[in-house]
Each structure stands twice: as C-alpha cells, then as structure tokens.
Length: 367
Image (cartoon, rainbow, N blue to C red; front, side, top):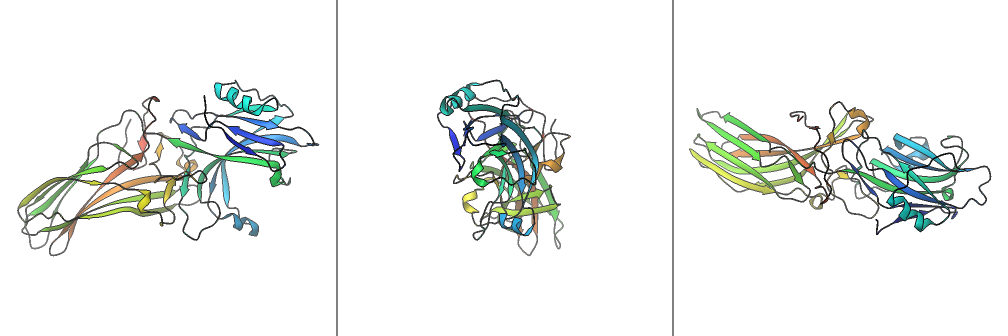
C-alpha cells in the first residue's frame, strides 16, 4: 500500500515510530485517520508505561523563551493512548497497519488517532533570515514516550525516552466550484463631469498554487483624463485568532502594466498574474502551508471553515485579495478588490463529496 515508510527511533533505542504517510487530508466532513505502529522493547521499563500521543499545537514564540518561564506553545487538542502495558487500545487493522507491522516485527503495536474536523490545518509563519528554532504556526505531532502517567506536569520525561514525527493536516479544493468573483466601480473626478468605469472579474472561484490567474478588466474612460498605468497587487491577510485579535496583511505580488486608456476610450483585456512564494522568501511572518523538515512549501492555502464552526479553535485564518488600481493623470485613482481563493488540487482519482462551505472573506457565502 505504501512505498515509503517514515520511521523515528528514540535515543535509548526502545521505541521506534512508524507512519506510512505524513499528509492527512481534511475533507471538511471528515479527516484521514492517523494509522501507525510503535515498536516497543519492554526491557528496563521499570514502572514506566509506553504512551503515544497526537497533539495539535499553536507555536507563537521561540523555544528559548521557555527557559525564562514563558510558554512558547499552546496545545489546541491532544490525545494520549497507552500502548504498553496493554490498556485495551485495539484499532481495526487496516492495510496500512499490516504493512507497518511487517516492518516493525513482533514487537509492533498498532494505533489509530481520529483527528476532529474542527481543528486547523497546518500553517507555518515564515521566519526571518536571522530567526532560529522552530517557526511559529500550527503543527501536528505524533510522539511516543516513556512515563508513569500520560501528562503529569511534575514528571520529567528524558529526551532520549521519546521519538516524534511531525505530520500535516491539509485541505484540497472541492470537486465542484462556483463562478468567479466580479467587482466594479464608477468614479468621478474633480474638473470632470464624466466618470471612469472599472470592472474586474475572475473566471473561476478557486485557483491552484502556481497557476496563472487571469484578471479580466473592462474600463470605460468618459473623462478627458488618461489612465496612465494599471497596477495589480495580491495581499495575504493572516488572522491570528487563538491568542489575540492580531491581523497581518502582507503583499505577495505587485505588478504594474504599462497599458494606457486615453480620454473617451474603452479598454477590454485580460492580464495574468502568478503569486509565488519564490518571490517572497524574505518576508517574515508570511503564512505558508505547514512545512515538514527540509521540504519546500508554498503560500498558505485559503482557510475553509464550515458554517457554524468556532473560529477561535482554528488558530490562524488565511485569506487573499486582488487589488486593481488605475492611476489617472492629474492625480487620483480607481481601485476595486476581489477575494482570491488559493488551494491545492485534489490528487487524481480521489473524489470527495461536494460540501456546503463558506470562505473566511466576509463578503460572500455559499450553501
């Protein structure tokens, strides 16, 4: 079933964690189960037990802050399972389990975690060039460890008695999507009794990371002024809702087009833009899709939430908007904004049910 196995062994050699994948898909109404195997050498355990846990945490500071008594992470959700001595966790064995049990041998113990649908997807805030340690953001981690109890704050767990693997919770674009957004504005200027009309539209609702985005513009300039330049920008807004009301907006694309529209003339053209992380590598705090160690990633996908969902638990909400700005001679401009949804396409052959959803842009709702 799986060609690649992810494996991590504790420093003491007693625990080895096996996973068949590290990306788990949020289908909105359900999330892929985390199916794994832990190989346990029971020698020299003493009165300690073997635990496996899955935690979703929000990291909002550097690890070295913990030394001075400041917590650098907050657990959003956590679940513990006792695997040894046997405490009754008997998951239904799947093909994935059987493959991993063959790798682990006789000392392998299968486990399954079911991730709730209301948890956030993995998001990383891009560190600055001089930042050290783990990046801020939302992450998921599977950890095996030796301890007398699952979560006694007074019990010190030695690093050599643990092994861990970071996983990602991700979303794909739905199979069926709606039509694209449209925005329009009619603006008058001083010393002119006629307006400039601007309409901007997108040809579909969702775009995939790395794809060119065609923005269709219709301009009717009834003034005697000249539209000297057209500027198109894309902004990413990151709403950190877990611990504060912080909102950060960062520009991820800014392109100027030398198209002009003379007075009493019209303009109808499609301009293409492509927002990419490759052009924004130095921007500290930019939201990225959760990164696994040494793997490249991309700009964070737009957050999709189900109607009635508690936004507080989502940790970080990400949205995008396109701004089209006409620069008019003699001063003044005409600007419209369009919500933009960026996501990953679903891998071929994996169909999910169309769901009722709404994007976090406050302007529109689909049911």
